[in-house]
Image (cartoon, rainbow over all chains, first blue to last red):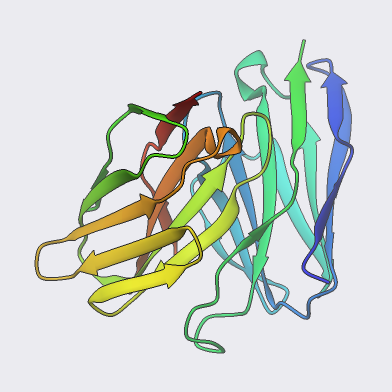
Length: 116
Length: 110
């Protein structure tokens, strides 16, 4: 199973709403990632979790709050977002740093978020 | 700092061969990845190079020259379904982060 799943596929939310994006993998990967991707742009790294601990936060605004409840799950909690936060949010997983030589990242299908 | 350059767009004909170049400057290099991304979909892994030379995988090959900070992705026997964006990404040695280039949008015509 080389699949990363994400829910929901699409999300429309108002600027005062609170919502969560979910990501799951069962490949035994101990590194999980959140990326934001705008149209016709490459993915931009937001957060990295390694062994369920936050290892990288790319100066993301606090209205985005990641959570890693266990080694298979990764959440992104959203609160008071702005219209410019509308984007495709991609989750990825890989073997952890130094566990493997190549450790390519496997991406989920993404959640297309629209903030109104 | 890091800088990764790829052509923005390329076009090619079905059945042809196309080479997508990627040049990079990084403070620490720990491997180069190529991903394919169809519009509205997630990136999918194509290849990984960490040593100089050519890696071949079916119709796709990837080449790396670390001394020149250069890689290319070679696509042979192009098919219409190869129309997609191709992302070059370099892994940073210190942070292990993947730094993506802006991507090359390839359009294959019949």
